[in-house]
Amino acid sequence: METMPPKAEVTIYSPLFSPFRHPLTEETISIGRASDCSIPIKDRYLSRRHAEIVQVDGHWVLKDLGSANGTYLNGNRVERDSQLRAGDRIRLGDTEIVFETAELNTDKVLAIADTRVSATIAIPIHDIDESPQAADIDKLTTLNLLARELIEDRPMDELFGFIVDRVMQHLQPSRAALGLLGADGRSFVKVEVRRQDRNDSSELTISHTLLQEVVEERKALAFMDVMVDEKLSRAQSIIMQGIHSILCAPLIIGESVVGVLYVDYLFNQRQISPEDVKLVAQIGRFAAAKLETTRLREDAIQKRLMDEELKTASTIQRRLLPDPPTGIPGYTFVGANRPCRTVSGDYFDFVVRPDGKIYFVIADVSGKGVTAGLMMAGLQAAFRIYAKNDPDPAQLVSQLNVTLKENLPQSKFVTLFLGRLDTKNGLVEYANAGHTPPLLMGKNQVTELGETDLLLGVVTNAEYTLRTLQLDRGDSLILFTDGVTEAEDADGSEFGSTLLAEKLKPMHGSLAGAIARIVEESVIAHVGAADALGDDVTLVVVSRNA
Image 1 (spheres, one colour):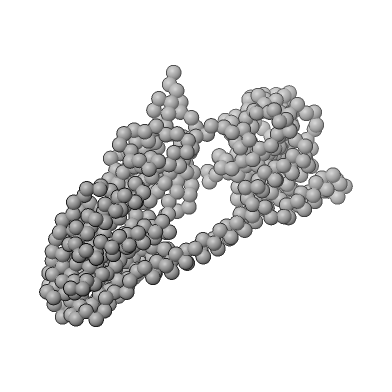
Image 2: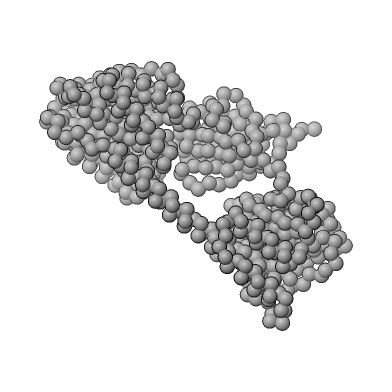
């Protein structure tokens, strides 16, 4: 008999979108840029079919599908099929995937059973009064006490347990659970469970049909006399737990059901009335409102702190990026960076040597945000230190590669183009480490410099070729990151180097500033607006005066 692997799910984290969960319900889960993958991720560093998570001999196994940039498991590149364990972290390009198994913790898990049951009482949520009848003093008192107890602000992690504890205190059930639903509406992403019997370690299971009716039909439900009700005789998930009565109500925020409040009574002859169902539903309303206001409050605090940190990081980064050289007879220079976020992973720099030669560099660190910004700062420090010894560009790129390989996380890398201009004669020596090909604008044509070597931070002993070009009078060398050529319009069409070359053809003999303006304006016109940029846009222009 074939052994089935444990139930599992993955959580996908990417700078391109909010985190989301994906249950592993198929034998093979494909991951990549292709739209027909089980988990499609539009990450430019992913192959179309990058990796798979598959069932093998009762385990979940990670397979790399020969991807160009590799698949990493807990920081190590996957060279052969690797068995996954709970908590494992998978890195693919800028995307991180966390693998978790559903090994049940009975205090945290509200499991879902594939059974069919029929509610004994079902009340649509819009038919539930805001408060019980005035004559029902006990229920009114319960609601008032709970409302007062929920006034005080508590951290979200404490609030879940606090609500369930108060439900146990006021309703005296055998067990109570508060569960938040995932995006699919069929599984729980956060659960708190409480039990009257401290020795009860049984799994708390809710019927799939019950959950479906609560969520999709927005009803508060009750099941009673389960042990003797013939209609419910097939509800094994309830009978096996010996439940006499259960109540379940939706947690509603706006128009969406985001979770459920569940209580049950084991071996208890207490009869459940429609008023009991309404009370649980009203408590669910209180709980949902408090959870939402707490989430909004904590999100606002976290966002404010993050905004302040990002503003500080952005200010520091802007100071790190230098002003272009000025006052160089016969030449003009531009260095410009437009981040799509507050902090950019792009980098440019200039170093003027005492002999009049000028180093210039442009680079793109994989990823975005603060992490990429920190890596960029480290790259700048290394570049300026090594440039003091006046190595040729190929030697300098090799030195940078060794330094980055020692310090970068294994799944990170850098693309870089580095040149050295001799201002006496216009000779440019350069090396390209996997960077977007620059454009050389001559008198009669615009040429793409397509020859390149391995990107930085992947292999320690990588070799880089020293190449040369000549800047004649009126010529310009235009360097840019892929945020320029891969900028997409509303239909998803990329700007591309061909269109960029067409825009530049009439610009021969122009100063560097004019050329940079044409490039930036053309990109923004293509995407529609400056705030529609999907990636950082960085430019370096080296122009020899006509």
